[in-house]
Amino acid sequence: MKTITLTIGIPTYNRPQALERRLNEIKKFDNLIDEVVICDNSPQTPSNLAQAIQKLSKCYYYKNLGNIGGGANFLRVVEHAKSDYVWWRGDDDVISENQIQSVHTYLSITPRLVLLSTNVKEPFISKGIKSFVENFPLVRTFGWLSSIVLPTQLAQKSLRWGYFGIASGWANVTLILGLFRECPDLEFVVVPISLQYGEFRDVDRKEGLRWSLFRTCIKQFPRTVDVLESEELKKIYLSKWRTTHGFHWVKTMVRFKLGYMPQEKITLATFFPFISIWNLRTTILAFTLWMMVNIPRIAYQLIFSYILFYIDDKTKQKLEFDFLSGCKNYWQVFKTLRANKGFASTDGFI
Image (cartoon, rainbow, N blue to C red; front, side):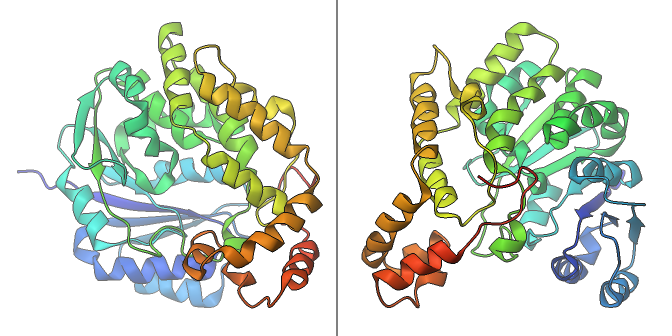
C-alpha cells in the first residue's frame, strides 16, 4: 500500500522567533512529517534561525528576492512542495500532535481537500463545488491558512486561480475554489479539532495584527466569488457567507475605535457586501457598524475607561485588555488609551 506523504508549508515574514518555535515543534513529530517548506519574505535571515533550519531534517528554505506579499508567498509554498499533500501553517500558529494526527487520519490516496475546524463535532465529508458552496458555514475555516491541507499536484495545477485572488487578499480561498474548477468532483472533508489556550496565534498582539481587518474580511472577501462559473453558485456563495457574520463585529469595532487594533480607512462602501434584501440581519449590522465608525474615538475611550473597572481579569485577558489591569483609576485608563496611536496598516489611519 502506498505511503501518503505530507509537507508542512510555512510562509513567513519578519517573525524569526515564531518560526523557530514552529521548527522546534516539528522536531517532536519528525516521523509524521515528510518535508518542511519555508518561503520567507523577510529581508534577512537571523543566524539563530538559520541554525534551527539546518538542524531539522527534510527542511527546505526559500528566500524570496523581496517582499512579494502574503498571498504570493502562500502560493510559493505550494509551488515548492513535493509530498502528496501540503499543509499550510501560519508561522504564528502552534503545531500540536492533536492536529497532526487529525490530518493524517483523513489523508487518502485519492486526492481530497482537508479542512480543520473547531466548529464541528463530527467529520463532514462531501464532494463537488455545489456541496462546498452550500455548506459554507461548515467549510468557512478555509479562510484560516493553518486549517488547510491541499492535495499537492492538484493545487499546483490550480495555482493560476490562487494568483488570480492575490488582489483580493484571499489567495488561499481562490486557490481552493480553483481546485474545483480543475476537479469538479473533488472530495472534501471537514475535520473536528480542539485548540488549547495559546495554540492559535502565539505571537504578541502588536506583532500579529498587521492587516486591515474590515477591508479584507468584509469588503474584499466577496471578490473571491469570481472564481465560480455559475451565477447561481455565486449567489448561494455570498448568501451563505453572510450567514456566518453576526454582531460580534460590534465588539471588534469597539476595539478598533479604542485604538487597539490596526487602523484603516473605513467608508460606508466597506460594509456594502453585508447589505442584502435577503438578509436583514447583516443589513442592519452594516449600518450599525457605519454609525459606530462616525462616533468620535474619544467617546469610546471616555465610556470604556469607566466600564473597565466592572470587567473581571479573566475577561480582560480574553479581550486582550489585560495590559490595562495595572491602571488604578479612571484617568489612568483614559490616558493610556489616549496615548496609543494605533498600529501601522496598509490603509493608514483614520
